[in-house]
Length: 284
Length: 304
Image 1 (cartoon, chains in turn green, blue):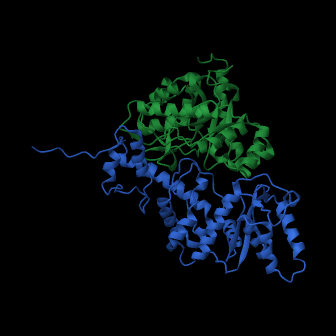
Image 2: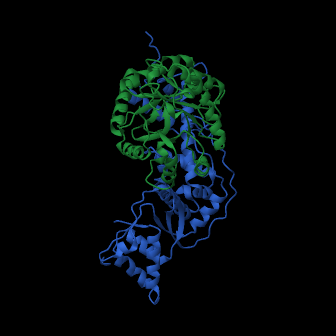
Image 3: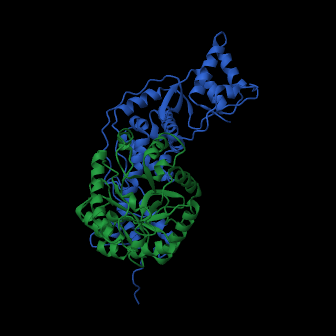
């Protein structure tokens, strides 16, 4: 039974990010994996090996698309060439939902290729929500927005990040891809209690969760996705799943990628929390 | 009456103004020590400019916080060019390649969502700024063309291939025009760039997939000076077969035909010049047939 109306895929369980170093292992060994998350932009190409590999994956596995370049918070007009390619890919993968970040990354036609933070203003929330609605109408697939990790805050902000996320998804009537690691990273960088964040978002909109590792520097934490998940993040994940109910969860490991088996083992640790939830009442 | 010091004007609440200010800060090249520049684009203090829109915290100033993004931007984009142009890098050296890449990205910032397209104006840039290619400008330009052709061949558009019979069936060679797959590039080179690139790639280990965050500038291998290729006229088709990129050497007449067809000339016109060059070769007609059959078997032809 779905945990909430944005979480029709509770049974997806634990997924893994599809990454180039694992292609050969996955295609030859066909490991048992509930689903793979792909970075949409890596497959928004015209032809060639990326699509050839994807088609082979699709023969065996369920695939969910996760984007890094829709830039829902940009003030440039929506890029319909980009969306056209994205829609072509949505049709190819039959992704049950599509996620991208609550961020911006381009301005005046110049692309930074980064997930840049937004000022948490009511005007920005209205702007982003409108764009999410337009994107969803065009792509005809449910949209989840993911909270990003950040290293800067703006004087212009009028609310907390979790209030901003809530404002956006309520206005857009969109779901949330809750990145627990990103909340932890930002909480350390901006001195807030990450549990305040978890407790105050609309849990009935969380359709997917991300977990990942990060790197600590002297004065800040960087979201590097190059380590196993750290204990504070697992604790937050346990808390989050109690609030949201069992939710499709994805381990991100994007750099210094170890063997497939190691990544798989790390991801499956999340299953323990979901199993513990199985006998508990589902969140409303 | 004394006036209080005037506070630097910032972007205020306006989202677009904030994004422009942020992008201005992070897209400025780093210093030689990989730090954010102390001056803003207007020559004033970058610390004051950053403070107008970014909050400091108990550990980092506004400048420090913007600098994290400034570094991420440059490390990520420079890494991408580093991966895409190993041949040019080997030719001009890592240090000059690094400086050239900064100059290139400053002049031609990315304009698409994909890093794949980041180097699409490299040839144009180098043609306008040949100083980066000294003392081998011709070889450098050929390498750039070749490396861009590799990127196009890897994932460029493929149209439904046409069989040779379908191409020629009932067609008048004087009017017939044949089209090649968009992912193929034909090159005439004065150096054996294919051999050079293969040797460069062989000595470089593949690197990990980039994450969104780049922790530090990737360790650059101190590349021993490679033996530069001696001039040799070669003709190439950079193409794709079974989803792998191939560099196929062509005979001069084959290149002539392919490049003429690509320019939209008729089959007859394209072949006539080749026949003239092979005057006296009684078997050239058969050779031609073999070439066309082979190109068709590679799936090179598509509807015009």
